[in-house]
Image (cartoon, rainbow, N blue to C red; front, side, top):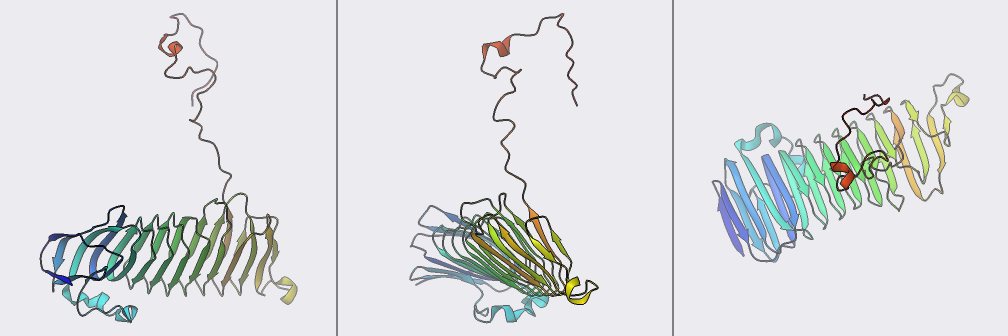
Amino acid sequence: MSEWSVTEPRKLTIDAPVATLRVRLVSGMVHVVGTGEDSARLEVSEIEGPPLTVTHKDGVLCVAYDDLPWQGFLKLKGLARTGWRRSAVVSLTVPAGARVEVGAIGAGAMVSGIEGPAEVRSVTGDTTLVGLTGPVRAETVSGNVEAQDVRGDLAFQSVSGDLTLVEAAGSSVRADSVSGALIVDLAPVGTAPDITLTNISGEIAVRLPHPADTEVEVDTTSGAVSNAFEELKVDDGSQAWGWGWGAKRVTGRLGAGSGNLRATTVTGAVALLRRPPMEEDPYDEAPQDVAPPDSPAADVPPPPNAAPTDKKVL
């Protein structure tokens, strides 16, 4: 086993194979980037307080404080206020296929380019996930999670943290929260995903691709409902109570119904949004009355006495 104690800014290169990365920090920031290299690189650019221990054994690279366990990590939320007077800014590059486990208390985390499984546990720090293709699991107490272009299955659980998922292309999204918002934007991919969202008082908003292809079932006890799809049936509860005070439901099939969308809240609002159709890039083709840049006609200036055009330039 190789071991280092980091007490000041330092760079390390791990030439041995790395199959798993484990990081546990209090305050500061951690960046993890997947690369096509077999080796791993570590840079600690800032550090205060006790040393960070770096170990490598049997393909597992660990960067953590000795007194900060992975088990029961989210129960250590009191450290977010005190921080044990410690902080570190850590950047790592690891093989893209490695498994990544990040625990952050009062620290931000960013993970990108990872193809293996990724798991993030955060107490109060915000997390950013970009371009992950393996399965992803994120658990927070009050930290927010922003994810873009995630192609693997995603599972999210939080008390009051928000989830913002942009261009989601995985086959499954499972998200549970008590009061945090769940915002999911689905990419127009070939396979319709299976989406299950549960919230108590936080809002849920889902933007479906065009054309949509999913079975929809939305339930809320007393939250507001917004629906952009005329094909879906909306029950506002008036049939049950006569005053519109009953539970609201939105059900129906969009397209062939290959995917599934189930969203449930108690008092949180629910919005079903429609992604506009994909449009061609207006700059892909030159206008008919304009010569291409490499055309000989493009180099010919207009005659000095040319008649003014009747087109308006806005």
